[in-house]
Image (cartoon, rainbow, N blue to C red):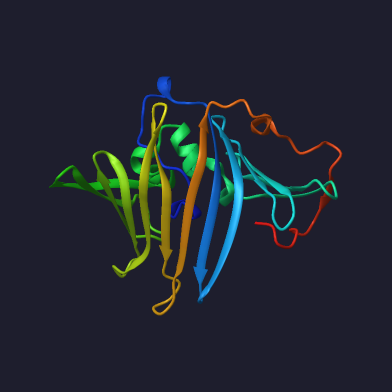
Length: 236
């Protein structure tokens, strides 16, 4: 399914762009459970309203990833001054929750960016609203998405295939306010890779800062970095 349909990053309800912050940074810990094994990856994330997303990883080696809305993706290794580059639509920051928040697309979780349209709304009381989205054209990989909001905050999404089976779930919780924003500090996704197996990913955010002045927001891969053809081992 499209990368943007199971997002493990910040989420925010839409607010007028006049009041939106321009920068957000946070510490991120991602734990993945698959086939009985748990892996943990920690990083620091910096996102700007221009659509650039920078991640800094310190373990097992220090390296940086830089992504922009045009689908340009770079991995930079300062130890060797090497850079690996790719360009694919799947790498575009338009499907990243940080960018969706900064561009005011949190209301539909960015589904509209991928050609999904609202087909129904059900109000269940207690501040619970369930919205159903379907693709405007076939071939999207996911036939239907159910988005549940509580008090206007997204708390759950379910993704269905053409046969009506759930192929993925996304849970958002532990909301906190940062300036004008309500952000979930815990995001859990479940992807059903087969009838008997699934991948569970839990993302926890900490040390959230808005409109900070950290120079990492403006990080650029050095001009003299040596291009490499193969993606460095162990780097995402």
